[in-house]
Image (cartoon, rainbow, N blue to C red; front, top):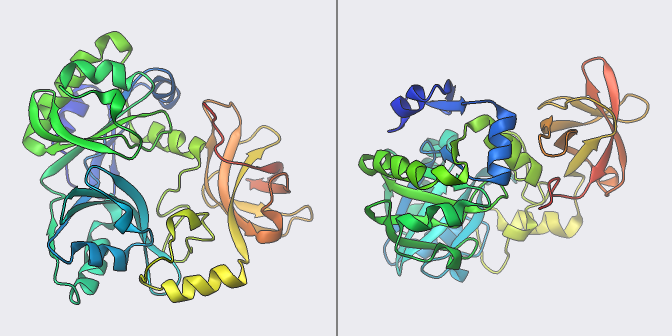
Length: 361
């Protein structure tokens, strides 16, 4: 089990630690609902240093990224980031990721912790035709997500740049918490605004301590992975391994907006055919009409009790006070307002297909 550079800090704060993607990670400190509300109303800090980072450089860096990702990375400029995915050769998804353009011929790929080795192998396989320089810097870098509506105001005193001027999915490389050359990215997985901070492992403790000192008057708290999951689910953000995987296509998962046929990429021909001929199933969002909590892998059934799909993510929404979830159903039942049922233990609970996000600011 690997530790992040802040593991002892989390333990000292009384965090409940659990194994996650091969790392010893904080799942909660005070409790999911308290931490969830902190991010929705104030500002919270996640240690997500388990995420993977690949540096892709050289004259053919963009060509390689264009080949292996579904989005059009040629639209990037220095200081901009892009959500994308790595399609596989059989219609599914290797991983979802964020691509940052750091310099003219240098990009940072941020991938899911559980997929670091798989992603590296997949991209390397295609790099034989491009010979771009690839560096796996995952073990050397830490990542903090400072999220919430008060993040800009709380963090402004510890950097020389104007945080309010960094637009969504843009970033700056600047001083932060007394450390130079930190990536300050206006991205996150919560839907409540804020930043993600990339720094070297040796600097993260200083940044963590400075961040909490600066945020003391703004209700800042450390937040665990459990609240990160409820926050992302309220926004309808996909979680790899649950809502998307090696067998789900970007179109089934509602990711057509990051699937651009302006260039050729892995399996693009087959995906174009799928788009042309239509889908048999789609990922939908639903709310329970009665009390209950939907969970991952619960069956979705019709009025006669026939299994028609499966819940990929589900929880009791702390913000809405009702059961919410995502799941795959036949396309005919994917329209907003459609009625389905979720099999919660021995009870079939009625639910309604709704439009994302569940939580609206």
